[in-house]
Length: 150
Image (cartoon, rainbow, N blue to C red; front, side, top):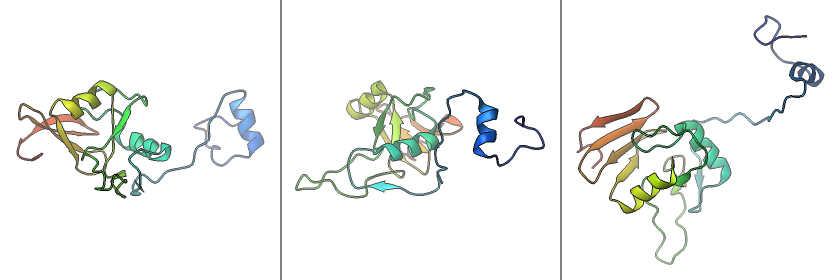
């Protein structure tokens, strides 16, 4: 038997993996290159895009949020603009303009005057209705000059 972390670990045959894992439930997923820019032509976020965005952000991108849940709304930090004829305008939904928000946070952003924009993969700048500027990224939330989000 090969034990995890031993000198012998590396590629294994299917029978070796079955022996190693026993009756454990295992899900095999493809490796994603998170540096790829992925775009969709629709307003809705496809499941593959949601997975990428969650892996990049790690969870809710609301300032000082701590949730890593996948039960979130996927938001367009820069609001989605429907075409004049009511059709979806292509290219607005993607890793460049998506972020997970808990339902309450999504409602506050949509209806309470909070503004955000994406400033790179997993980096979001916010301007609160009270004029506070913050940056949210993988290191947490920190205040920034309020003119930066503007």
